[in-house]
Length: 400
Image 1 (tube, rainbow, N blue to C red):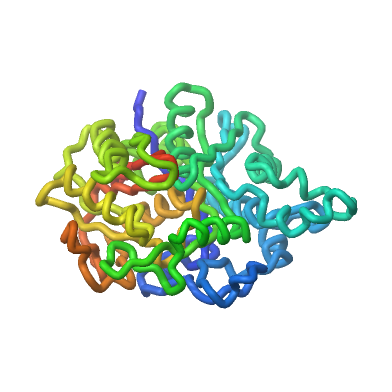
Image 2: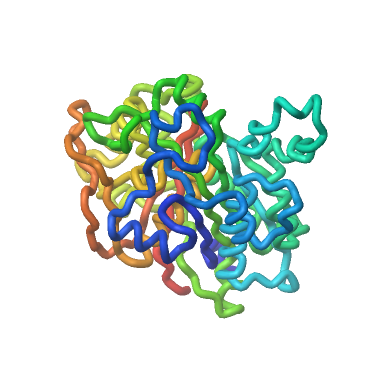
């Protein structure tokens, strides 16, 4: 029996598009979704730019095709929209084996509960939103909409959350717990996260510039992305389109600091190295890296050092796509996994927009324009607070 885990469905909604087609169009046309704040209710409205999905609550409810009388968070609505796309794209049939849902989030439902928390004690009008606050609420709502009952769980490991959800999903399949998995993540923008990152002093007031010497911090974003994983033989037997093979994955932790990576990027180095080892590939086999690339001083320097440690003077082409979408936190890994798969599918590497000047300490230059190249293996990184670092390896599907 084949042990290959393949990707058969994709779904995404972010600031650069409401589906796969719109997202790809933005990527190849270098159209960023980061701009002035118009959705989030914040006193910092004129101070920062965000990667907002320019849809109101009512518009998202309509897109998700859910009951408008129920208490919905943006996090749950994004997740439902993207997971439905992936479910339908893969043509999932609940009569053909067990289906699992592994969903990631860091914000949970606080985008709604924070609007009403002062009234919870005194007024029952908004009390239904209390139960939407926790991280598992969006997972449960996605599962309800897709009628998934075989297995569901929520993962929250900061910014590596949805890469870890994909890894966990692959393990569920390999261990025979389920036959197919919808895995990914979702996060809505909230005042809490904007204020929190502002307190950490790692937000850029202008569009972020990952891996640029002038970088000043990140731009927050929102959205969701999910992929469908299943065994190769199942996908072939059902005549599925196969987008890519999930050929390697790893999680590591440098346990260095609550928010910073160690000086030499020990966690990022181990995550990338172990993902390659699991995929039985050497560094020279990697054609492109979709880096974590937040635009913060610490991340870009330490991620760069980790890549140099692993790849030496044969560093593959690399770029960060967070200047398109913003940093979508718990959804970032799955958003960038889909972008990586689009790179493989189209033999296209998307640029590190806003890049101008090399970081002196590492002297490495990301891709700054759309480049065409035959791609076989693409690595994508997501590194979280607390040093929870993950890397996934996607490979062009070759039938066996």
